[in-house]
Amino acid sequence: MTDEPEAYRRLVEALLASDPAVSEAQMMGMPSLKLGSKMFGGLTGGHLVLRIGRGRAGELIESGRAKPFDPSGRDRPMKDWAMFPEPDHDWLALAEEAKRQTS
Image (cartoon, rainbow, N blue to C red):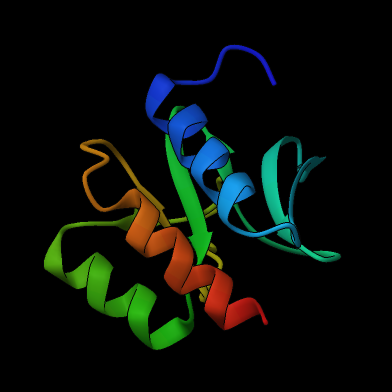
């Protein structure tokens, strides 16, 4: 995939190396991460987005670590998803958590 932040590319490479069921795709108009046939994350506007579960997304948004993911731009965020700007120090742990939610 092109024009990706280095932090996202490092995350993708780590996930691909650690789990053969993880793959890359283009879904919802963005570079995406899949576990089998299910999307669990991706990249939009330079931010990592993850399907991390409704409760956990709410916690992370309330703490200020994440922002709501509203791909429609109509103030209708996806409830199980959260958007994570850099810094990327916790991206791998969060992506692993999202991957576990998917399986």
